[in-house]
Length: 256
Picture (spheres, rainbow, N blue to C red):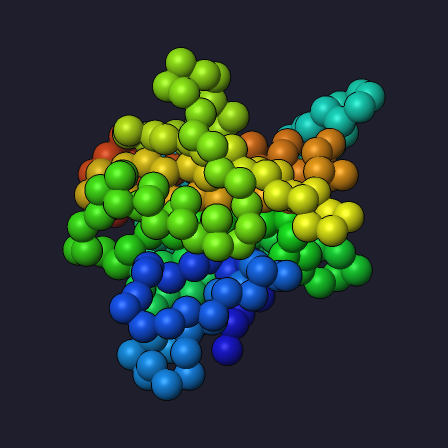
């Protein structure tokens, strides 16, 4: 069972490529493993693992607030936005998410996933998604391997993928990222035009993929929210840049 979190505050992320078959549902961009493969069944993260709480940043006196106010600019003046704290112990990250979005977290033998969606009529809109994926801790993957996998899955979903040059300005700059590679995503599916970005990078001992995608009609609003999620990332105990030592995580956070 998947746990959805509307903070007290995907498209689910894909699994690592298997030797067995994988069914791709491109309409909601959700990937499902064959029911016959028992070892690939996903175990939802407990609700508490995604709840907002205080996370220590530099010392026991410095914590991340459960929520904070920020602003985004759409077409006119700045608009106020409430951000809620979101911690994922499986992926080892902490960030802030707009309060009008929802998240789900799953872990399996293939890896750890965090899927953040916009809401429509109170339900997750999987066409507007921020999807974070990494292979399980201890399973090594190079940036090249993850990029190849990410591109293949995006192409399977009907997306046209093109890598941005190293000299191009980054659409999204991930805090603490090493060897970041960025790909533009584009797809016209009937009357719906999907665009987005694929980010592949290292942090510490793990390699991550972040996939951002949304209908072109939401180009004023969703990318700005995605930037808030990504720009607020702090890594928890990854031994990489912009990382916090595990012992500095507050007792309230570590006890979850």
